[in-house]
Image (tube, rainbow, N blue to C red):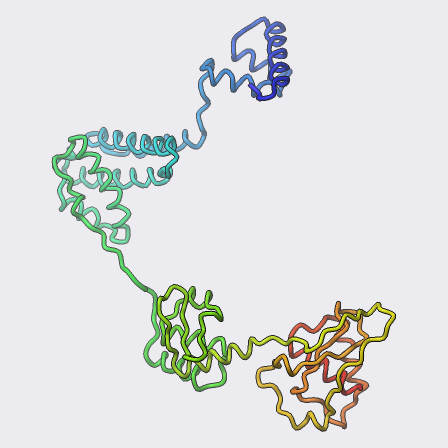
Length: 384
């Protein structure tokens, strides 16, 4: 009954009223009347009748269907070999129930059906060869059966080992023919590999050429020369990199790995490219503040900036960035970033048009990359 005392008392009162109204004590009649007049009470009565064995426990639909499938597989076995297969199926089901009762990991119903499929196919193969008992099966018969499908040798052999182990314990066979059989599995990498010419071409691309990005070059060289896996590269952190000795300790390895010149240059390029743009000064001014924004540091003119080299990677170091105010309200921050190392427009350009274009871009979306910040700074510097 229900844990709540008042709910249980109410259920008992309604059950008594149900018995008085129907004038019967048959569980089937009481359940039928409860489903018609008191639907909430029908489940409580059904649980009570099943617990005290007044009604048969309802069978699980999945278990019923699985039992029917096992029976079909057992019936497909030739009659002289069928009793042993039926006993083997019962043992597999009993092991599953015991594992569930003990809280262990039981075999799935599909696994039991796969084992029965293997034994059924073996029985059909042996019966076609003239075998009428399991006692005369030897290793040669099993090897001939496994040779029919070499790709499934490991799966079939697992089922045969279970069956003949059960048959040996029950005295059905005097010797287990599947005990000494093996199914070797290929170890290591089994995919396609690159030829030596392809590896040399990739090495030249990553070490000498400039077409590859720094991250591509480092990942490729680390995998090609130092056998770094994707997991090791994914979990590599700055703590594992030693600049003084030019070594890297990949996750899971016990020693530091000394990098060659090409791999170290690629790693340095990755670290340089990943350097974020951060402001040199921070202010607390907001667009809605009545006070005027603070005056930013003086920016270089186009004449002085034209002699500076442009950034090679489209990014700037933290000390090269300085904030510039803007009147755009589309972004949450009133500041934009100007990169002095970026190339500024020449004197013959039209600053009014550049300012209008910059304002339109800022209204559409705030600059998220360092290149956008540099372009915004160029337009505003030209306008100033």
